[in-house]
Amino acid sequence: MSEKTYIDALAEALREEFDRDENVFMMGEDIGIYGGAFGVTKGMYPKYKDKLLDTPISEASIVGAGVGCALVGMRPIVEIMFSDFMMDAMEWIVNQAAKLRYMTGGQLKVPMVIRAPMGCGTGAAAQHSQSLPALFAHIPGLKVVMPATPYDVKGMLKAAVRDDNPVIFFEHKLLYWTKGDVPEGDYTVPIGKAAVKREGKDITIIAGSIMVPRSMGAAEKLKEYGIDAEVIDIRSLVPMDVETIVESVSKTGKAIIVEDDNKNNGWGSEVVSKLIESDAFDYLDEPIKRLAGKDIPIPYAPELERAAVPQIEDIIEGVKEIFDKR
Image (cartoon, one colour):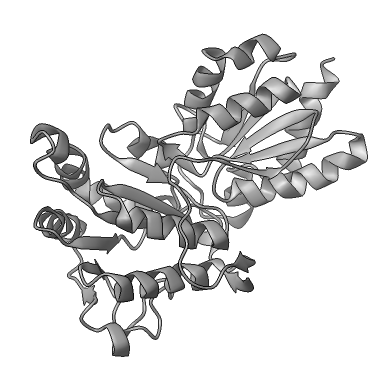
């Protein structure tokens, strides 16, 4: 193990997959000499100039080319500079990549990864700050993941590259400079498996992406109030590890879901639905609570931007509200 930043773990996964498989390559805007908008491929170009393909500023063309390459046996990794820009490529993602394997009875497959930096907190305003995992989780044929730690981002990217289905790979921009232990060498983290980040007995906090470290911070503070919180990192929205979530909620009897996206029709509603339809429902002592972003475009002003999505103090108050009802 060695301590690495999220962005270094991501870059390490890319280099190792480039070296492992000649069919793996990456395309996107300014990923070559410039090194990417967030520096993920910084310094790679001299060694991997045949693997890093700079593209025109056209997300539809980038993803469309990726689909075509995947159909003929390549394993493209497509970088969309901001996840918001995926809207320009929806035809290729939703109507082509997601459906071709099913429509051909498995004769064709689309083994591609779409990497998408998401989320607010950088002052990039409404068109560059959205969190869109729930939007793509609604589309059959796509796998949707959002790793929260350096360990997971390396292992899950490797798993995504080796998957024979299109994987939407969301990376929250505020996670890029967080640090954590990462094993040297090759390993994968399975897509479709949640992780228990902190064990507890009083309540289950189900979180994803940037809300995982915030939930961990809240859980530590909640000890001061005599509340022992269990934190589940959902990691993968499609497929979703319902079993781990149900097991935790059945143990604690209480649940709060913490999301980075806006609340209306967010992925937390699906988690609530699955809990209600499961055996965990019989163990609930209190209604399930959802804590999510405001149903507004992300503001530019720093104070308003911060208020638009849950922070550590909001999670603490949300959990306390559940216990105050008793």
